[in-house]
Every structure is written in structure tokens, then in C-alpha cells.
Length: 396
Ligand code: PSV
Ligand code: MN
Image 1 (cartoon, rainbow, N blue to C red):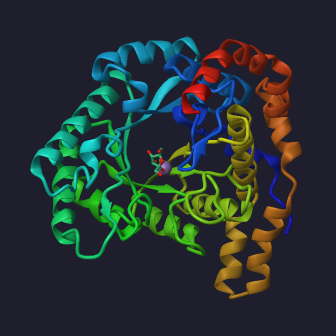
Image 2 (tube, rainbow, N blue to C red):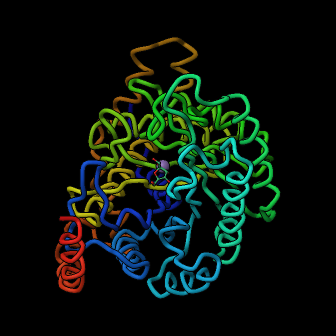
């Protein structure tokens, strides 16, 4: 197969934006402990500053995903301040994530809790989150629930399903005409027997029941081993139900590894389904591409830059696929040629094209290297190390 000209890659890269999560810059860990990084961000201003740095090095991350409990210290009242601070760093608030899992009252669930008072309280937080999204000019309110149970017989699964249907419909009613809500699924963790939104089918059911502005969010780390994620993506696209992604990679469960560190071919196959859909439809799909990673071993900003680079590489490779030719080989049932089209595109080294594209935008060819040479890390390490050392002591 003759690869298509870099024009198609340039056009694809021009339209590709990636949202980064505020929580990716803060100290996080595993349930066994935290390894604090001296340069980690603790305040919303620091998180926005780091996100602004990533955007200025890559040019493709103008928005930051925000978690309501972690980033809006005074709830709705802090919305304007956060939006203004974001502007100071050249970025904008992106998806708004209600926190329906950390409060003690959510021990047995939030919107699916058997106690109506807890459900009301969770819904009030959702209402605040939608209001925050309106005030900061965000389109997407993104739902992930930890709701579920750990032991057979302890939860009424059908009642909980009904509670969630009602809650998502109520949430949808709060949206303005230009807003969307995204429903994320996850098979397990923290619940280990049943999870109320365990897979894409359940997420799609809730989104459909909620209303037309509700779509499904695919977090690449939220699947069982060997699950065919690109097929899920193809189905959601064909049902007009794919709203966005949370990118990360995994070897075992929700490992939060940098995208493509374990299986870049899967990332490519996901993008290939999207590019095939866009080719057939003659228009870009409306998808919010977001990262959801919290790094405790790699440097947080470097890991984010590395993920963006990998996402762009796989996206560019998918843009090399000749879908007319692929369609022909599929119709001919020529397995060798059809598969070969994908493999040729995946095997193409697109880094020189990516460098050209970045140069054409006045961006550094290698964002990680540019970051290492920028002095930003030295500066924030100096500024933040003492505070992060205090944190270390408080964990001892
Ligand atoms: C849950 O594992 C998740 O993927 C959800 O998107 C949360 O909002 C995010 O991680 C941060 O904890
Ligand atoms: Mn996620």
C-alpha cells in the first residue's frame, strides 16, 4: 500500500485536541502509599500553571478537566476565580467532574444509595457541578460513580438501576442546550462484587434514558482483560453515543500507565475506528479526547507530555489508513491485504511528520526535551519542594 500524503496527517493533527486532568499534576499514589514528588502541584493555581505549561509546549491542550471537590474549594462560589486563573495560564476549564465517591456518606453509594437522603445529597452536588460548568463555560459534565457492592445479596441491583435512571434524567434536566453529560463505566474497583455502571451497555442505557445530550465516556483502563475496546468504540459511534475518552494504558486493571506504554497498537486501532467513521460520514466525530492518568513514579508533567506525543503518533498513523482501499479489501474478504493496510500504517514512523507539523505551528519538535530544557521543572521544584516535604513528614 502506498501511504497517503502527509496532508491527511496534517489535517488530522490540526483537528486533534487533548484535555488534561488537573489531578494528573497532584501527588497521588496507590492504596499502599504515596510517593510525593517535590514538584507536584497542591493548589489549583499550581495545577493550572502546569496545564498551561503542557499546552504551551504541545499547542493541543487548551482545556483542563477539573474535579469539583478537589479544584473548587468554595464550590460554585469559586467558579469565576478558577476560570480567571485558567485564563491567566492561557487555558480554559474543560470537563467538570462531580465527586460522588469521597464523602463518608457515600460508603454504600451515591446516586444509587438505598437512602433517599443520600441520593438527594448526591443530586445536590450534581446540581452544583452543572452550575459550576455553566459559570466556567464548560460543555461537559462527566459522571463516574463508585457505586456498587462488595458481597452477593447485599444490594438490590434493580432498585439501584432505577435510582440511577431517575438521577441521570434529573441531571439532564439541569443542562443548558449547549451542555452535555458523559456517563463513564468501570467493571470493578472500588466495588468488588457488582458495580452499578459496569460496562458500556449499562452506560449507554443510562445515557439514553437521561436524554439526547447524554453520551458515553470510554476510559481505556476500565475494561476486563482482552476486551475489544475498538469494537465498543465502533458500536458507540454507530449509535451516535460516543461522547469522549479518558486515555491511559493498563496491563492488569485500572493501572493509569502512560498511554500506549503497554499496547500502542490498541490505541491505533481505536483511532482507526474513529477515522473510518469520519471517512464514511464525511465529517469529524464530536468526541472529547481526555487523559485520565495520575502518575506517582514518572514525573507528572513529563508523563503527560509523553502521553500526548503517543496519542498524536497513533492518531497520525490512523490518518494514514486508506479507507476506500480498506473497504475494497474487506468486501473482497482479502484478509492479508486488509490487515496489511492497518499494519503498514501502524508500522510507519510518523515522528518526522509530527516534527514537521509542530515546526509549522512554531512548537518544539520534541515537547519532553523542550520541557527538560525550559527550566520550568527546576523553578517549580524550588517553589514547591518545601511544601511537598511537609506533606511527606505528615504521612510518616
Ligand atoms: C475512576 O477510576 C476515574 O477513571 C474517574 O474518571 C474519576 O473521575 C477519575 O478516575 C479520577 O479519580
Ligand atoms: Mn476515568
